[in-house]
Image (tube, rainbow over all chains, first blue to last red; front, side):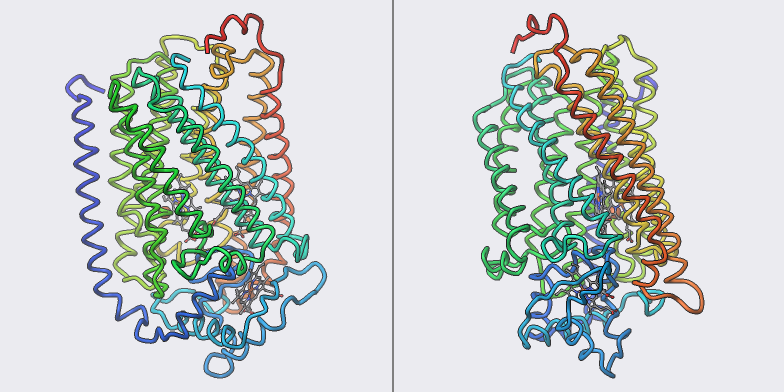
Length: 146
Length: 463
Ligand code: HEM
Ligand code: HEM
Ligand SMILES: [Fe+2]
């Protein structure tokens, strides 16, 4: 690098550039947050849905599954499981029955543990997954298999 | 080693390598469960093994960063560490807290651990990489504050080099971004939005400053090139890192409920993120070519060049592969992501920690610049076995990922997740085999610490 290009020039590019883009990012974040209510289905976050999220977290479902494509890649995507398994036509029942019936015990097949959830918790986590399926995700996933 | 107090780094490096072994053991369990689904079930369910694997990774990398700081900050500042005692104390606090947390994962069902640690008071658990009980997270913050205080005081008392300033900026950034792990609203979209402020702004932001600073330090030492030149490069690299990487966060905001304009912002800026990694390759090779001395620690120079190349491949090339929104639409949350995650973490952060260990350990052990020829040979075997097997792990996961996308997400009659997993099992077997070779490489690497000390080493024990 040439002599004219001093260390303080590159230091200034670093500090100036980072601060500038940090501010742009914060600005974009404000914009995003103010537009989210129309997309994130927050009007339907009932206490039951909030409890469902807690059940989801307290049992570390994300350690095997993806949710909206993030998490682990060992077990099916659950952001759209409500729709995949019947939607208004039995989606909630499917999720509850599924969790109750685990583990499958099929030899050599990937296993999901038995979590011993109460009826209240089962209903809540099913409602949470239904709520999640109603977030506007810009058309993702590409098809119902997730 | 120029300052007595640098010796505390040794404790951190040994701790880091111990946890590294644990991380890989659990990686092998995961790899086995991918092909034999009920392996160790229900004793160790997949999610538990995964938490142990990823959390050990993060903790040992943090140990590595802290060890690096304790080693290089005094040498750069030309003064003793502010408080070696505090450094030792924090090591044990962190190690015990980490061990208790891992034991908690393994011995208690996760929901029980959440109850036991009163997660409901301030719920932060159950999110990927941030699975630690809230109390452990608070412990991490306390350790981080003590560490930053110790390092900060040392820097203030001594010479303020660019390397120290960049390292400190990165470490402070690391601690600040971690605070977002305490924000966990009921609204999943907001939760995810700020979760990435920890994860993305760590690995594609502040951690790269730490990476750059350590790399610059080792390059100065092994090449003898002017500090001026090296520091100019360092600032330029991290400038481009943050200029591209901050808005690059947008590549995680395509499909989680955020607005469609993120597809443009994320694609454009993250497509530029490989540039700083490419600059690191130019930087490392240029400096080695211009070297003013032939440092006997060939292994350290190999690790330094290897870091630059593998970080560019893993983060730059494998990151670019799936970062444009139309492609990410298909690859999001598949084995492609896992392929990239492995090579990027290994190439950038595992390798930079092994670089500084390679350079510093012989000094810390009183062996002089190297621990002898036999040690160097074993270490370089370890380098090649681990690096080549990681390349294969990445290639096999990429193969699995391409098939997964094709079979599950394209075409008229997409297969179900579980059916597709069965069809691509062959690639998972190959990954498992490569993982075993990786373990072999790690054992070889560790063996390099148990060779006979070089002749005349005792005379060197200045520390
Ligand atoms: C130093 C070496 C390694 C590093 C840095 C590493 C890093 C990681 C990271 C970052 C994740 C989370 C991945 C993501 O979310 O995309 C992960 C998950 C995983 N790792 Fe590793 N790993 C290493 C070695 C191994 C080995 C040797 C194996 C097995 C042979 C392995 C098997 C796995 C598996 C199966 C997962 C879970 C993937 C999933 O979610 O389905 N890892 N590892
Ligand atoms: C050393 C630097 C990097 C590391 C350690 C790293 C690591 C990771 C990991 C572990 C994930 C998975 C996160 C999860 O579990 O959800 C991920 C995701 C991702 N990374 Fe990186 N990364 C790095 C740099 C980059 C760069 C430079 C790019 C772009 C050029 C990139 C593009 C992406 C994308 C697009 C995803 C999302 C994948 C998906 O949609 O599933 N990464 N990265
Ligand atoms: Fe990212």
